[in-house]
Length: 562
Image 1 (spheres, rainbow, N blue to C red):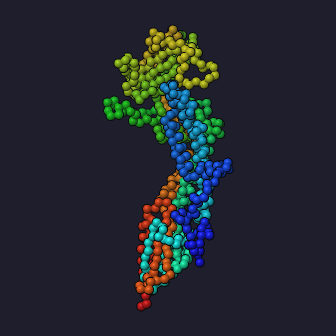
Image 2 (spheres, helix red, strand yellow; image 1 turned 45 degrees about the horizontal axis):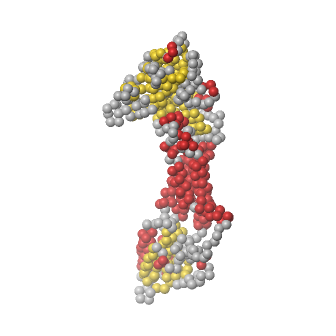
Image 3 (cartoon, rainbow, N blue to C red; image 1 turned 135 degrees about the horizontal axis):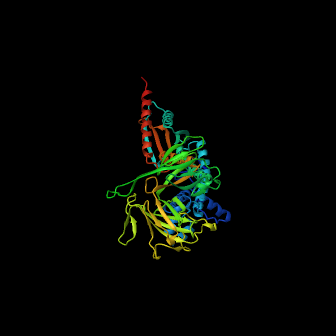
């Protein structure tokens, strides 16, 4: 015999009410408020940190904190872009650099959000996993006494001339089991019932989602410690060897020192690019561009690959991405005696959509003074009304290079790292262009210009029958966590959809023992409760009542004497 509803001696532990039922939990809002000491505040802080609400807020904060990483160039991925941004915005750069917007993913504030999210998820998952395990091992809750207080409630009168209440309850239990509910019977005063519950997979999906998020965080942290990212500009006809000294920039993880790089070499055979014709819709826009490369690895045959934006190639454990491209005119500088002191295909960095490009030549030896040249390359040169030169189309139609010369100490020998794409002119003497009274040096393919002060000449060499070579900017990346991140991301999606699509329901069927004396019917009640929103709850109760009534009527008919 279950305790009376008027008996409140054990109301806090009475199992007849589900914990999430409106009157199933004790009212703990009354009574004096307790003042918290230091330990109490720590406990309160921990509970707030490990709440699901805090985890969601931190997850959203992490997503927002990552946005600047896509708006500003990052030193680890685009060091040249950082240099260019500093040159274009010298007044803003010191402040933005101080707050870490060029190293977003290594900044203290990003790491703080990351670590707090990690702790919050761990604190959420562990107690929920324990609770879910106990729920899986437990039994469906006791049947509430007052069905009318539940969200969904139906009553039916089932013919009982040849059907007992016990048989009707057996049929209800069978029907619920067929619908994959866990069932258990409970007795009350004047009634018997079956309690059923399903949807444990919903909580399993929620736990899987949060565990997968923890897995993603751990994979990223561990993977970044052993990962590295490097950049290299490769000109057509030249070869990159995967050694630490051959990178333009190299950003290793904490435990990656560059000593275990995959041995291979990469030669840029040809860079293909097409542009929309001038005058057509989208004229001048790049339609397609790709780097055709040859890969050579020890113990393997040479192979050719095609690197396209967003379609990297894999060499060993490395992924090679195409980041950008540009022009690399071949310049040769001779001294006054005609001896070559400099000759190279120099990458000029694009400055606009029409490929107006900037390049720097540094000649440390062979001339009376160290010589620096700042040059602009115009693939299709034209003149603005102001008299300034510009490029009006990105393809090579009317190529021109203009160069301003500077003499003095280039700072190469003082041991300070300096970019090969920038020339610090503060301590140099300008020899041509600007206010010097000397015209800038202007070159076309195959032509030669004179250096100032009779120091020699500079020639624009045609390369392999073409006026100018092209270069490809490649990113070489190794990330051992990528597979794990993908796997945990898939698990997170599976858990998320499972938690969203599978409802958690409790259904009760109560059969009263006494039948009416006038029509010999059995009084049956159906009720249901959902954890969270469940728009299909009413329909589920209706379908159960209809199915149960139908099988009871068939059983009653079959039991009639013949």
